[in-house]
Length: 147
Image (cartoon, rainbow, N blue to C red):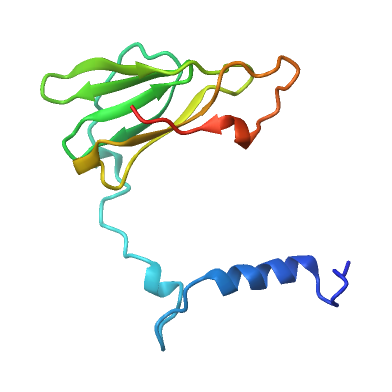
């Protein structure tokens, strides 16, 4: 079905997407220029060591590793925890009240690009107190919070 301008909607969206991409340097393939060669052995399980950070987590969803080796991780019910490599201990960094119906809760964590100097991290969650009959995800009701 045409969009009134004689073009297909999908083709029009594809052209808008391409226009938003930065132009590759002259003579370079835009895809090949962004790819890296795989490292030998990077897919061999024997090259990795399994380390158990928390033997009894409650619905863990995501983690972020800081340059100093600390591991920040979240539990769906709202707990933010830190594993400290110096003594292999776990500390509770904080708790956020979240909505936990269906697939809601504390869903994501990431460290700021300047985490080494500013210690900021970002959390993705569905805040508590939603209307009982509103169970569909709503991005306007999700926030980021600093701890």
